[in-house]
Image (cartoon, rainbow, N blue to C red; front, side, top):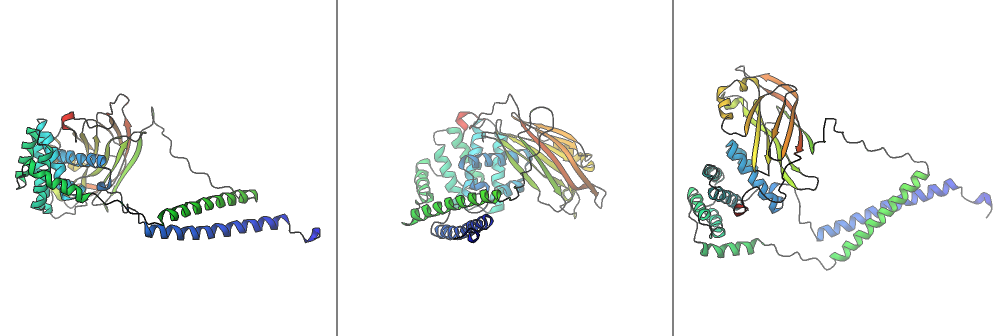
Length: 404
């Protein structure tokens, strides 16, 4: 073969690049087909959204405790119902009964009464089955059979719901049976499942190698470099950077506005939760007005280390000057009121969490009676963990005898 008959270097490089791209596409098609067959034969256990009842049992306990604590402070049964809607009747009854017993044994009768009131409200609103109530109360009675105070509290709790828990000895058998019934059978893998899984892994490995080769070749042929990732925003304030920076934004189209996020250490340990939600609307005092005419927002912090929710209520000017609303603000020592205005700054502090809040944006409007309400509100929250805080990682801040 003469030198003139040989393909040029550019032609060879082009052919190699085309071959790699064709191989990559074919590999993707084959790999997708194999993975699809495997998924059909071995459907994933998890599907759907991240709902509270899909959390691990430990985080479910934290979430239920936060909802109950929030109700004790705010006494909003409808809000508690919405937050607990993904849990089963039995889960709600057990959580409420257990915390009622814990509060009674701890000498906190007012909190126990509030928990019982919430249970009655949920039972009436959701139509709890008497059989479910009796079964859950019986299991709780068995759980606390060696603790007289808690056992008596469970009896009182069940009586409020119109049921009487059976004796501990009789409750043990149904509890064991229910536990056995709820225990899922071990998944049985198909005989070819392992081989399909290995084939899929090999295909993915081959695709990764092909992609790497294509990228290297593309760069050698003069391909343009990839666009660099835009750096994240840098903390510009004084002192250590916050653990989390978040902005809650409300507008009139969000009549069910209620947002929150968890607070965790860099190691992933749960410390609490922070959120913002609607607190007061014009319709609460003026009949016939739209429920979207919001006059107050709760900005709240749940601190796990002392199991307390601290709330600052952002009020419009008319709500701030309303004596009835201000009287409601005095129902709890953890509730404070602030007149909302652009640039307003306020702080919320728990035992371990400190939140620095700023009203970043605010648009107001007038209702028919002259009351002002929010058309838009944006509140920025910077969350800090106090340097001297005792986080008590992995435990709730309650006596050992009362822990879940």
